Length: 87
Image 1 (cartoon, helix red, strand yellow):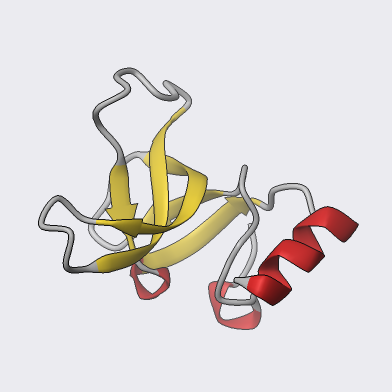
Image 2 (image 1 turned 135 degrees about the vertical axis):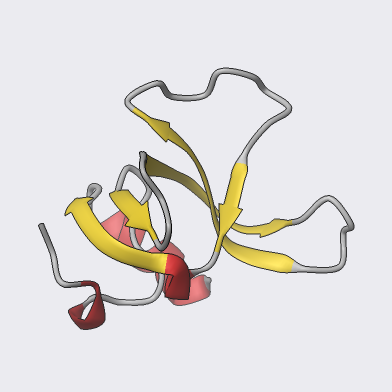
């Protein structure tokens, strides 16, 4: 388990986290997603872990400051590093 305070803002896809007040782990599946009102942008989208994406029309949206624990860090390679530079 990683200490979230020592990690970069945008964690890689595939990272498994726990959110404040949460009771299920979340798998990060995307970045910079609009909420239903199309006015607010969230840092991440995700799905329940280990269940995965159960429905294509439902995604969990959350911000970096809601993460309290990192259980697994997703793949970090050159592609991911270049993507985060542009993000």
